[in-house]
Image (cartoon, rainbow, N blue to C red; front, side):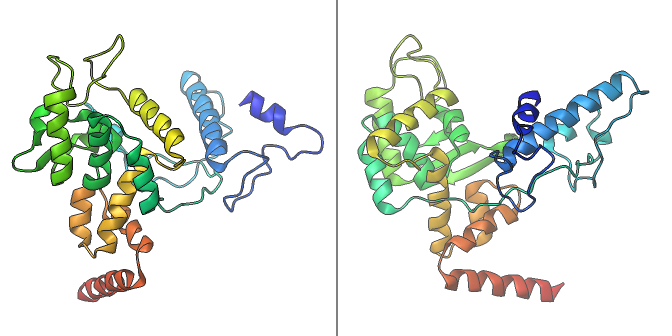
Length: 283
């Protein structure tokens, strides 16, 4: 934060308090960066006020948040959790719609995947809609290749059953039979070589894999989450019911799933709007 203030106080440049509220970059800093640093400063003053109640807290308090996070609800005192006040010193962050990949980008990215493990992981994201963390958390017993089902452990330790694409099931089976290292680990995807061979693949390892494949395929947007978004966009374009999409994607709130409606042709959005209007009229 001191570095931020020092850089922002150069003559001829606006100070840290000169920030746009329309989602534009403030003094060369992205809105999310400004908000993180302001939150850090607010947390510092809150901590000092807790240590010495006589010290005033110069950070203004805004309106209370509408909800309590799952982390606040957990624990022995979770029943006492209340929405915390959010500071009004926030820069408005633009809400961007999820970016899905074009068909030629998907083809180029998958052509660079040389191992069955990498093909299986990418396939689970693209054709089953799994998050990167959900892919890494899969255990061998969570995959029913014959019945073509997945038992997925999502956010908040919520389990859901997801249909397994037949082609992805075949790739996973080949990986298990021919490529997966001998190990007592129950996780499905393991490190293939090096000193950590046979250990569960980590999130850092997954990022390294996709970073490498983005470079060799020439698809800079080929991130794991982009594959999941491509799956969600395909569901919306096919007219899949919103509740089904929510279940497949593992969203806690239907509003998150509804974002995909705006990525598909107009007739799908019109059907969604008509359904919402009927729902409002019934209440």
